[in-house]
Image 1 (spheres, rainbow, N blue to C red):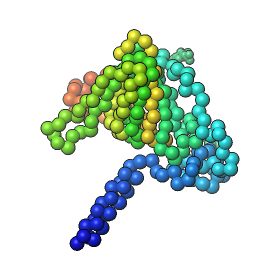
Image 2 (tube, rainbow, N blue to C red):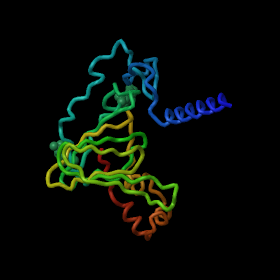
Image 3 (cartoon, rainbow, N blue to C red):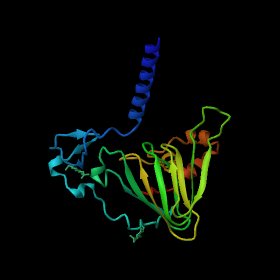
Image 4 (tube, rainbow, N blue to C red):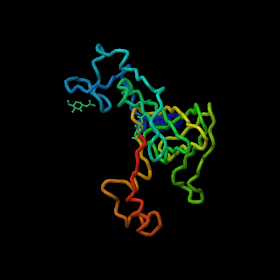
Length: 230
Ligand SMILES: *[C@@H]1O[C@H](CO)[C@@H](O)[C@H](O)[C@H]1NC(C)=O
Ligand SMILES: *[C@@H]1O[C@H](CO)[C@@H](O)[C@H](O)[C@H]1NC(C)=O
């Protein structure tokens, strides 16, 4: 009986661990796997081809220039400068990446989600109004709950994986934040762009019903130019 209970506990532990592993970036399996665009290479892990480890150099793990402000002259007044595996090949298989985010006064990083990463944001300069909304609750008595606050220099805020979040510069100066993300390739879904700016457009009948507005409101939104901040 005791044995059976122990085995059951073990199976549960293994099952939850297996689920966790499936939901995360894969294990590196080796020290590193610097991504390289070379179809002659023979090691292929995690979607990228690994550079021959004997050819790997320090620069494969280096990205320079994150001290430079991003250009915020755009309709949203913000700019994300990503340092993912696409900019820093040494991040391949390591399950982590970074961004710099610049905000002009009134600049907005609009509601979006990273399907593959939790984000931890550190504000260096300025004042941000930030928040995220929880997923559709299993208990219908609970709302999609907003967790929002104001950040000042030195404040750190975390946006849990997959949840819709935003940052808005409510100060009179430019704001600068850096963030770490728990994936080498976090992905971004900007809500307005995905819903109203898809190519080809979603049938307005779908969005009219979903957003409970008249068709001309949807057509107006679909006719807008939806700027991608990164
Ligand atoms: C990789 O190489 C292919 C073939 O030469 C080229 O078309 C592609 O643009 C390259 N990709 C990158 C990211 O350099
Ligand atoms: C910033 O972007 C705007 C709009 O694309 C462009 O006109 C301007 O030259 C850019 N500024 C810098 C410093 O690159």
